[in-house]
Length: 352
Length: 72
Image 1 (cartoon, chains in turn blue, brown):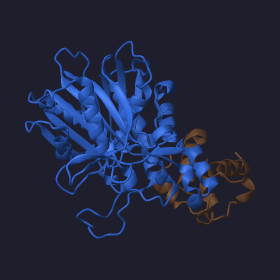
Image 2: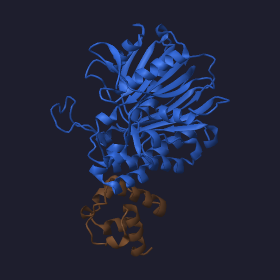
Image 3: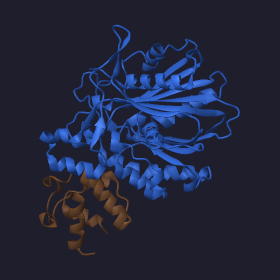
Image 4: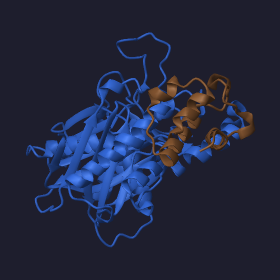
């Protein structure tokens, strides 16, 4: 029963960084034909994505988001006790990307930095991991970074590869004993289906294989997404006594319009509370949930805190549901960036 | 439901004209029978026939007739 509750952890802010490089699916007309691309748009809701520029990576987007969020919150660098980076996109085989970001942010060495290798379910797993760490007493402030540069690992050999966009996010968590709204979670894994979304080569088992790109068994993953995911969400809501109207916002992994539509239908959710950030940014993988939250809240005046249900589901197969409370005054920001890290010269560079 | 009606629905899911489909056709010969069409077919079974079909069951279908049989 992987249900659980995390108490006294406040969500202090969420910032998302998007690569300043819009790519329209119609740019691929020569390869796939106009009809096929129109069909793709109709079926999935995606007509454009934002993709990393040249050497830019997910870690750069997460770094920019974290830098901006720390400044907005006025947090001293020394006060951050943990940095968790959750992604399927890493700078190096080793060391962990979280350490590289810790260095760039100028955080203290008295800081836990670790990577978690998850994609679609990144935010929910990362939130639970960071929140759980805070229950142990040593971590008072944590940064959860979820990002992806999937466009570098999918080959545009089929139209479905055009659905992926890149993005980075930073979520600030703070130990706060006055916080009356706990985080609840339900996390699941089905490793029996590990090949459903699969990059066969490049790891230690097939180091020299040619099939380095991610292959998604679309039909398998779709069937999973429209069955197990709504069931899990309903189970979660029933377990914690939540009704559809109790929540202000439902932030889902941005698979495609059809999948989210099925979840809305099966869970009987109010569609106006379910943002489809994929229509602007495509499927942003690990960053999906924070991007969906930011898309929904970026131009809204908040006169109260928001009770949010988040769900990520996919590669692993790994999925989960959380509910959390975003205080009224917590900053929620989103911006575009052309910056990346030049590790030879240890500096940030802006792409032309 | 008549097979004619089912063919119409199937054609709609594939994004082709019903006249382009016949029961004996092999799915491998239908260009539009791809993952998007398969996903539409899963949704169709779910909405219109209240039926869950697994990806495995779908993969075992070789002809248009096999798909029509699922539409019960």
